[in-house]
Length: 118
Image (cartoon, rainbow, N blue to C red; front, side):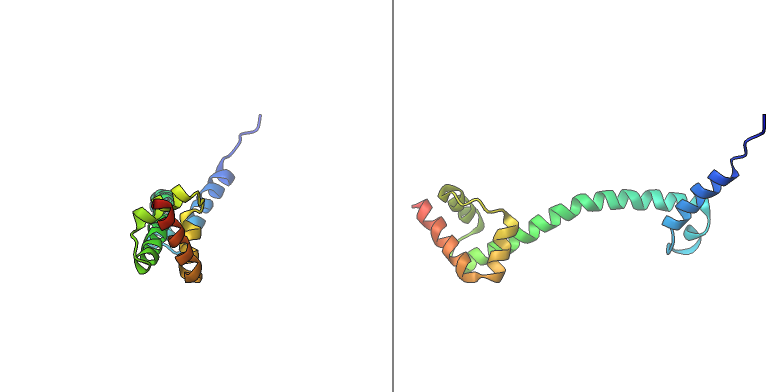
C-alpha cells in the first residue's frame, strides 16, 4: 500500500489559522505557533464580546428611557411599573426609540403609566 503523506492537510490547517491572524501585530501574523495562540485568544474575546454586547445595549436603552422619564417628572422604575400595570407590552429597545424619535408619544406613555399607578 502507498504511504499517505499529511503535508497537504497540515498546510491547509496552518494557512487557515494564519489567514485568521492576518493583521495581527509582529510575528503573530506570520509564525504558526504564535498565530494559533493569538487566534484562540481572540476567539475567546469574541465569544465574551457577543455576551457583553447584549448587556451594553440593554444599559443604553435603560439610560435613554430614564432620561425620557426624568423629562416627564418620573423615574425609570415607577414608569416601568406603571406600564406593566397599564398592560403596555413594549420592550426596552422600542421604548428607547420612542423616547428619542417621538417625545410626544413618550409623554403619552408616561401619562398612561401615571394613570395606572393611581
